[in-house]
Length: 142
Image 1 (cartoon, helix red, strand yellow):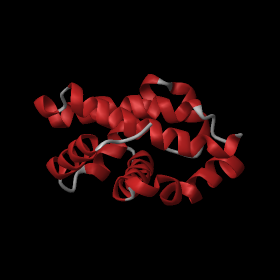
Image 2 (image 1 turned 135 degrees about the vertical axis):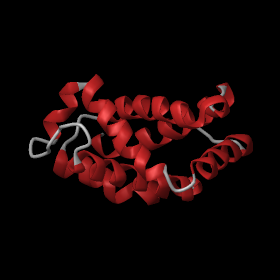
Image 3 (image 1 turned 90 degrees about the vertical axis):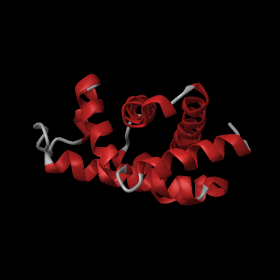
Image 4 (image 1 turned 45 degrees about the vertical axis):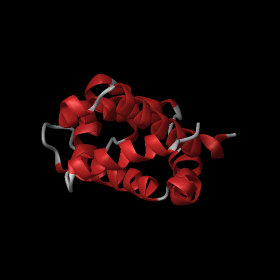
């Protein structure tokens, strides 16, 4: 997957529109993940999964910060996510399918917050980005 100049512009435009709320969106996406794909909860047995749970919101913020780092390093996503890739593959042993499931949930959250600006081109740019992130996170599993 390669992000062209227009994809990069659309991603940056989305982030600037979301302003500083991007980290909040991580919690929303993670909540959706646990609701729509309850099997993903198995990696968080110690979390309070109730509505508005601080555990889920805090973990979602971590996820969003990692995605933010990848967005800030589009030319070196592998380098930006190397530590997380190692952690998820070797220590946490997260099923790689979960990265795609979370990406789907992020698409929904982005569509809700960006509304009309989340058009087909913007969706495609984010899809390419999430695919790159997912590939990076799964590399260590091979």
